[in-house]
Length: 261
Length: 178
Image (cartoon, rainbow over all chains, first blue to last red):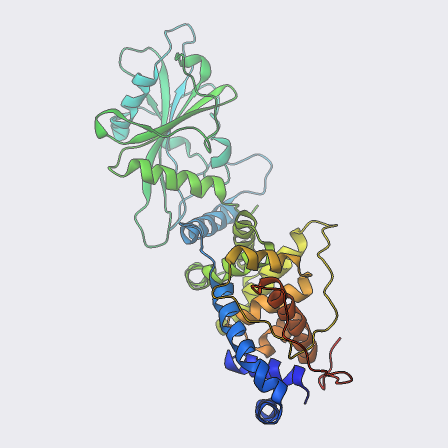
């Protein structure tokens, strides 16, 4: 055995990595005992090994990574398993232990000539009793937000019509829930969908779900995100005490995950 | 069909290792997170290939490496390694190894030298594990580790000055290597 192999085997043995041929460790020790050069070099080799090992392992994992991984996989599987192969996309409720459920409130342009609603009026959707709202009937199927598509599908019976106070507009509302991590309570909220022409607001946002700001609902009633995609306006509301944080977690789970299919 | 509970446990148990490995290979936090996601998505898709849960760690690391090799850009050629080092010319290590310097030194290495180094210093893989994962003879693993370690020591030593070498001319490793 030469100096090369002896020092490599001794370092591997010191780190618990040598499992190839046990006899070679004894041979390397004998070499060390007899070789002045290796006896000189070994303490520093050993020190290098310990320090490199500690430094190599010192990688900080990003906060929430496990949650994001756990959130993406089961949801992706559920959608993938239940998604129809037909080109005509089936409108179906995707339930499941960890899968998301979506309910929608559609704000839809029944009466284009009627006065549009304001963001302030839309906020009231967080207080509306979904069970008491009538079934939504529109002239077409409203789309889901682009980034929600891989995770959710609409069930028509879940879509209710919401009419903001002092407005002739009819809005569609869909409740949803999303399990961030197995064994935890699902996050719950409501999604509003309406045409841009239904909404009057000087500050109509033109963002994506991934980048639009999270806004507080007045009176500590939660938080929401409003954004536009083409001719559509979406509003995602959560009304829990931890809504700003949960809304951010939900958004990150949808926008940073990459489901199958 | 995969088992969701088992998959969730797999994530809980191994996501940190997978991420660390992906980061050391790619040198980028965003690439490492992408690779981690890809790895568990592929693990889900290839669930039937996992025969023993005790082999899950090696299996996942193999997926990480394949995903990394598949994703890396063409044309980015790392610097070549110097000739095989003299075994007894070991510079003193620094008091603490600078994390950024370590990653930079790793990034300079060709992948075939970087990967065994990372696996070796993670202290979770034995020589046999590394050889099996890279599908290489033990001697080749040892050779690549020796050259990779020498590169790190040269790059990370406080002074690039080596202890004067005693001659080992003519000595050849006894184990088979590339």
